Image (cartoon, rainbow, N blue to C red; front, side, top):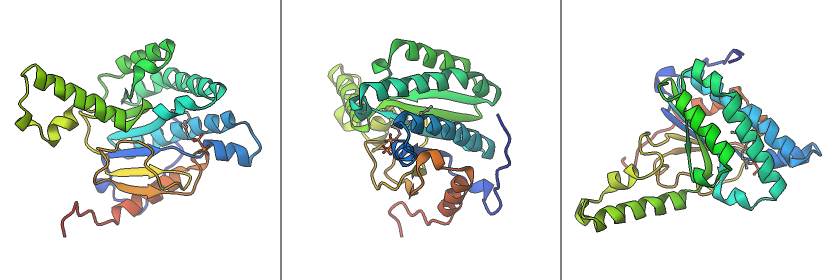
Length: 245
Ligand code: FPP
């Protein structure tokens, strides 16, 4: 882990969100602006991922969930999907030792069975190598779609009802949450989206019911640690009322 200083002046380290979720958007536009192939944008975006993981770990964030590949992303041109898979595999392999050393627990949420088998294998290895870590939980959302996650939960609950393990009247919000990929995590307190789009894009729909949203115009490859700190400071000035007065 490189240790470029992180300027945290003015940040209340005791009031950080425990869970940050990020929609990493704008790799393609970053590449286009520079007259480069879109894949170059994803490559530069992967460097930003490394930086954000390092910073979140160093300042003491407990859970970081990054939207790295959506179920809809399978519809991109084949060459781009393949390039993203190469980058994801590279990340899962090359960061394994870093995560072990830096006490990061790695996990993937999404339909991992849709991923190429070699990547599934590397994910299992990294998960396994980091399973006793508790410094920060890093979740990559891969082949992830929130609606299909909810459908999966509903099917599992229906099956429990069908087999008599669960009474219909006993189903509550906790039952649904317990069947999501995120069952062992707190809901994110902060969702960051880069590149200016005001959309949720099928990401953590259930989990972000009360999440603060920060949208920045910065394209993901240009996102910096100073901007992350600025967003965190802004978050700390918000009045979170959860529907109350
Ligand atoms: C959005 O850019 C980003 C993605 C589709 C996926 C995010 C992937 C990375 C950050 C790189 C690899 C990730 C890891 C974890 C190593 P876009 O292509 O939608 O950008 P655009 O909207 O400008 O076209």
